[in-house]
Length: 235
Image (cartoon, rainbow, N blue to C red; front, side, top):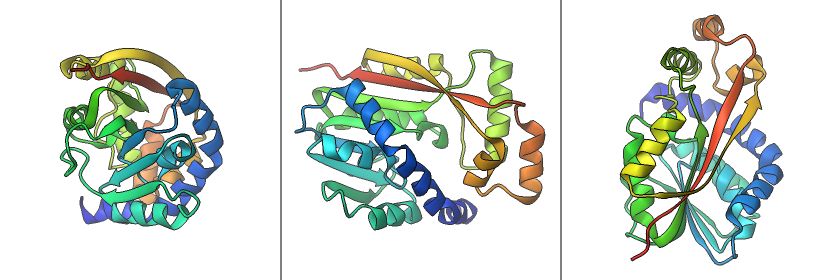
């Protein structure tokens, strides 16, 4: 990761964590509804950031291993994680993790794939690390099906946050799932309205970069998030 991107995450880690804390209970209830966890699951949170998914899941499962590439985000997560002793933060590249095959009941990625240049490698790792018959959860922003609209969205998102690689469409994601022999068990799309100034602040977007992002921004920005729960075939 380049120094400018690390500086961006270092500058915004606390702000991101505070936003995630304000959303934690709602996320936990949504996860409870979608996953119906039994309480004994071992979970991988790939691209954990400051721990949004890990902390939301922690009371519902046995253990969460939360992995991210950015030390500043991990440090913020550890600082705020005293109430969740079953969450372990590890530094690692989610496209190539040093973890044993089939070692998790659930592998998950929350709002991470659009930051990765090769999301297919993340999916391959999520599948590799899930046990046979285990589950994979992917939650991420999805781009419009219209290629021109998707291009405009991605231009704005990259201007706002240079850590953005590409927001994938629903069709793109389903293609990745099929390529990894995953069976779709549940999916839904959820719209999320955004206040533009707050959204730019969250990425520490300022100066000329902010002016450029504002010029590219939709008039009324409503992001769409896809939730996908998938099953890895058993032996």
